[in-house]
Amino acid sequence: MLLAPENTLFVCGATPVLLLADAPVHAVLPPLIAPDGAVPLCEGWSVVPRLTLCVVDGPGEQGVVVPALAAPVLGAAASDDGGTTSADMADWCTAAEQAGGAVVLSVDRLPKSLDWSALLTSGVAHGGFMRAVA
Image 1 (spheres, helix red, strand yellow):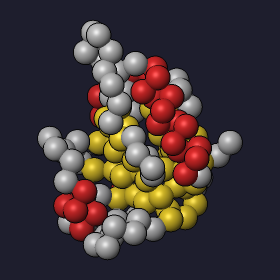
Image 2 (cartoon, helix red, strand yellow):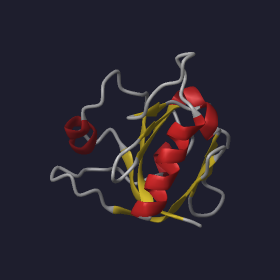
Image 3 (cartoon, helix red, strand yellow):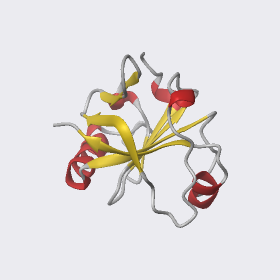
Image 4 (cartoon, one colour):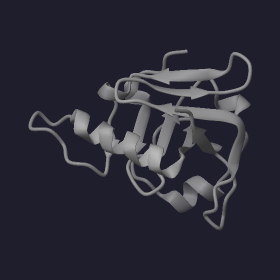
């Protein structure tokens, strides 16, 4: 299932994060409660971080494809036209490869501001750490 890039947010960091909004896999991902910030492994799921497409693959036929090059990336410089540059997505992909995966969080809608404590403790997010597939 293709997920519109405006329903995603890639967040750069030592452990990169991919936020998915209104994703068709939300109900099949495990609810996430991590009050201590230790995000559990999302068993049976993987992420394929690529510059043009990012694939979140689950068991059976479950999964989503994100047109990554068109998706917003937080934590990297914006291009002159106000969008994100391919280097931003490249940084996210590199971080995911170095971390061995990414935290993938599915929510009903993208938050106006990132409150990690609320995302990890409220029970509204589903997902966890997904290992990267080479």
